[in-house]
Length: 106
Image (tube, rainbow, N blue to C red):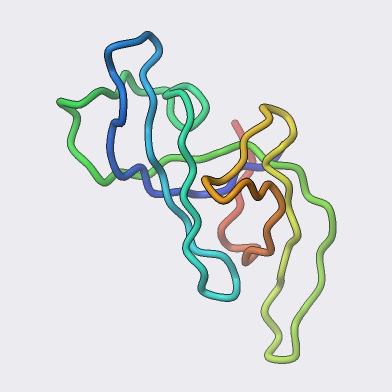
């Protein structure tokens, strides 16, 4: 399983357990995407409104395709819909990102 690196920007709700976080990443075309979901989806740390932000996190993803663009960058089409049914605030779940944005989930 792979994980897309994201930037955790803030806690949007810590009145419920688990709390909810707002996160961002930039795709291979330079577009910023925002994700909002429960803390355990993005981090193993006990984050809340008192935590320091931004900080690094990750979201599990599945690789759909890989290729190289004309400048030679390795691009990867991923879905964050599997395994945890995550989508962006724009209702997107498939993205093209740089391979360097992905890592193995330990």
